[in-house]
Length: 111
Length: 114
Picture (tube, rainbow over the protein chains, first blue to last red):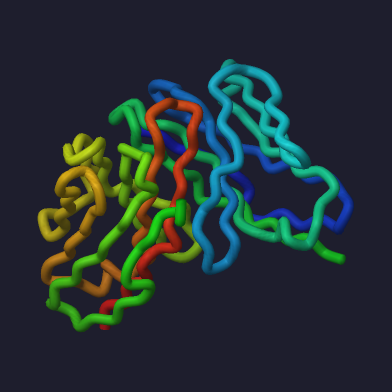
């Protein structure tokens, strides 16, 4: 099966940089995705890494190391609106399309 | 493009009743997914359609759950003989073909079984 580990909570102040880590175990790997979800809202796709390295999209970057089964989401210049839950997800080898999500990291941005 | 729409937003039902949820995906997306999310957890996969074909189904999905996507457009998820353990947010998502595209999720249907 697949399992993902990410911290349950992270707190940072406005303007800071925060890194949310994700380690995964899966018998086959098809890419690591990140989603953001505000309270009561829908998950929103942030990024996808299939190959090792850093992908940058504005204030958000995502990193993947396949040899370490590890990735992280980096949020820079934190804003209050970044307070949300962040989920990493991997594609299951059992099915070609289904994603397995981690339990999520609740990010709180303080003024 | 109005995004993924789900109806109803909230549903309260008595244990043992049947409920049906509807999802309208983004029209250009041929892939449609149903997920379930409980408080403090990530979304949990239920089933996947490519066009009208149901190609994947979670082993966790009991035979009380059924989903359809007639004509490859909207989809419905039915839960028969609801149980209190079915209380959750039911999320629908769609995506275009291609690995690099993420899902676009709808706002979900919150089911409460009393």
